[in-house]
Image (cartoon, rainbow, N blue to C red; front, side, top):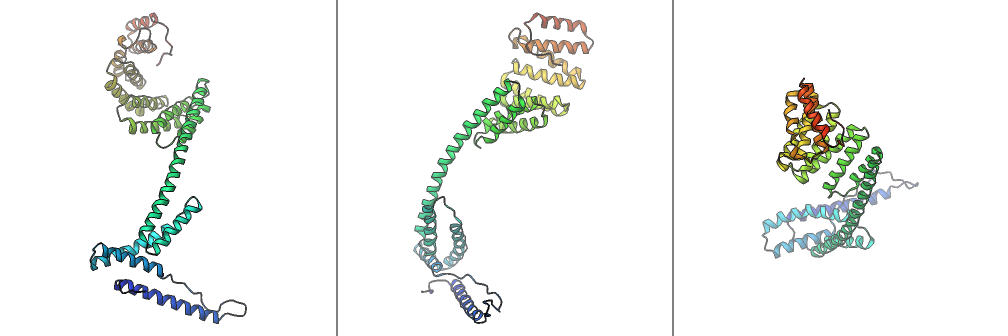
Length: 355
C-alpha cells in the first residue's frame, strides 16, 4: 500500500504499530518454544498491542482524498486528519456498540462499520441513516401506542377513584389516583396536575396530611408551568394547600397561600364573585384563629355582598353566621343578632358553620 500520501505523523504511527505487531509475534513464538511438557508457559504473559489495520489506512486515505477534492490545503489537511483520527475511533466504537432490534438491522450496522473501515464513508453514512430511520419509525409507533394505552388506563383509574370518593373510601381512592398520576405519559402534565389535586384531597380525607401536602405542592408547580401564575386553577390549588397547613395549625404557612389565592381571583373574576368571597372567608377565619379579630372583621364583612350570591346560597348563609360569630367574639352581640336573623331567614345552608 502507498503511504506516501499520508502526513509524516500518520506514517510514523503506522510504522510503529507494525513494529509492535512484529515484536509481539516474535515474543509469542519464543514463548511457545519454552512451553513445559504440561502445556504451561515458563515465560511472562504477552500483551497484544492493537495496531492500525489495512482497512483503517484505507479510511484515512479516502478522507485525505476527500479533503483534496474540496480544495483543502496541505497544512489544514494535517489538522483535519488528526481530528479525523480521534473521531474515527469514536465512530468505530459506537457502530460496534449498536444493538439494533433485529438481525437484519444488526447486519446493516455491521456493513456500516465495514464501510467506515474501508473508507467508503458515503455508504457508511447511508447505512447508518437508514438504520436510524427504521429503528426510529418502529420506536415512534410503539411510543404512540404506549401513550394511548397509558392515557386510557389512567383515565379509567380516575373514574374508579372518583366513585370510591363518592362511597367515602378515600384511602382506596388515593391509591388509584396515585397510580393514575404516575402512569400518565410525560406530555400530559396538565392532566397529571388535575389528578394530583384529586390525590391530595383523597389523602387529606384519609388522614395522610403529609402526603396531601406533597401532592398539592407538586400539582401546583405543574399548573404554574402549564397555565402561568395567575390562573384560577392556581388559586384553587393554593387554597387546597393552605387548608392542609391550616388544619395542622401551621397558620404562618397557610396565610401567604390564602393571600395569593385571593389576589389571583380578584384579578381574574373581579371583586364581586363567589370565589373571591370564599377566599375572603378563608383568610378571615385564619386571622380569627390567630386572634387577630380586627384584621378578620373587614374581610368577613366584605364577603357578605349579597349581590355576589343567589339568595340562600350556602356560602352566603355560612358567611353571615361566621360574621355573627366574630361579632360576638368582639362583644358586639346586638350587631350579631341581625346577621344571625338574616342567616335564619334564608333557605337552609348545605354546609356546616365554619369557625
